[in-house]
Amino acid sequence: MKSAVETLDPTKVKLTVEVEYDELKPSIDHAYKHIAEQVNIPGFRKGKVPPRIIDQRVGWGAVVEHAVNEGLSGFYRDAVNESELRPLGQPEVEVTEIPEKAGEGQLAFVAEVEVRPELTLPELSGLDVTVESTEVADADVDERLESLRERFGTLVGVDRPAAEGDYVVIDLKAVIGEEEIDSVSGVSYQIGAGNMLEGLDEALTGLSADETTTFTSNLAGGEHAGDEATVTVTATSVKERELPETDDDFAQMASEFDTLDELKADLREQVASAKTSNQAVAARDALLEKLLEAVEIPVPQGVVDAEVHRHLEQEGRLEDSEHRAEVVVDATKAIKNQILLDTLAEQLKVQVGQGELIEYLVQASQQYGMEPQQFIQTLDQGGQIPAMVGEVARSKALAVALRDIEVKDSEGNVVDLTEFIGTAEDDEAEAAAAEDAAEDEVAEESATEDQAKA
Image (cartoon, rainbow, N blue to C red; front, side, top):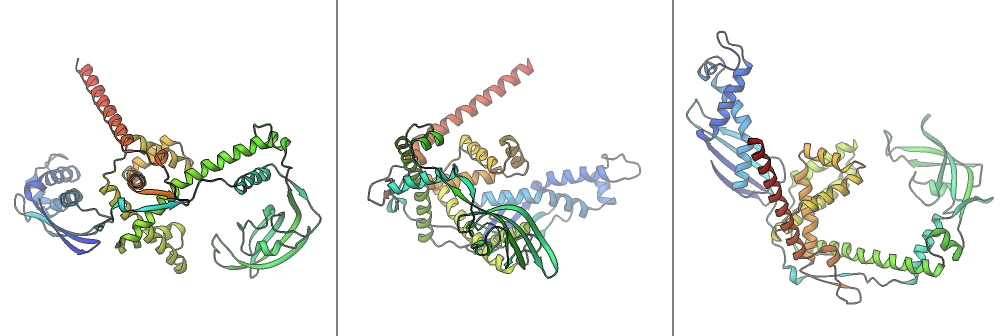
């Protein structure tokens, strides 16, 4: 097989492939066999029709068409690997030549495909990032303590107009014209939450129990999403959250500690731990932004268009031009990040261990509310495991890159992120363990085969 690559633009190439007859022959043989099992020809049993008879009765054209359809994807994949291309989308393929008769000629085709552009990344050793300090202020502890108080607070009815932060039990009805679109009754809503209808917070503020008001709002979901509706809301009761006193009794009720001072000390440790973890996340984000700023990344438009269409189709909003513009921005950013991180992972020779992949899949299964084994089987059946490996590699690439740059906090102190980004020695140990496990598996299979032969 011969192949040649022509660069059309930074994100698109034309791949010309020529396949000799001998390389196509296995697919031709399979085509004869498959057709023989499908046709009825007097004097021959199904599956036993000779190729020359198939050529006479069915035609060479049908045979070679079947062979090309079967073998084309494999020849394309081999050519891509041979040319070291990194496709990002599906190719547009045109077959330009096929064998004219059995035993002669060749298959030739041209494939245009969008590919990952070549990037030149800056030297990591020349980069540095700054993250927030892990110093814990009293205000940080007070904020945690206040959240804990709210968890143990109780709602009590009040005889006054509703204010921000209050909980109001409401009856609500939305109407467009004369048609009632939606209604709910007895729903508890906290003013200021902003998670229902736009304008609801303003409408409820100042409303007392058993009072009703009307306002207009654009509906957020359903078949009338985006349409303006007239909304009538009644407050059936108004309640405020009454918080417990912060004393030793509260500490004993809300924790395993006997005193408020002990509880505060534990909250301080929790804040410090969270801030330390946040440093790692912030460092990764800051490094990604620095790399994005340092490199011009061409984005394959076809890949963006396909992702935007998939997203909008999933939401049933293909005709929503305003939302489309937002999705285009998000998709372009995501694809830029992917191109950059794939390049970084390749440059750093990042390897994904089986343990890392399984850990990622287990966490992902929890997000989807599925059992890990079921989740992994579903991905495997859909051919999605390689995509998951890519996700892990991109994430790991940033972690590995952070080992080569200087990370300081806002006070100028060098930050040690080893707990979160690991070391090269950790990677080597995991790779060695994976290799040992693979060798043990091969030895076990070999022993099983020997037993079977015996």
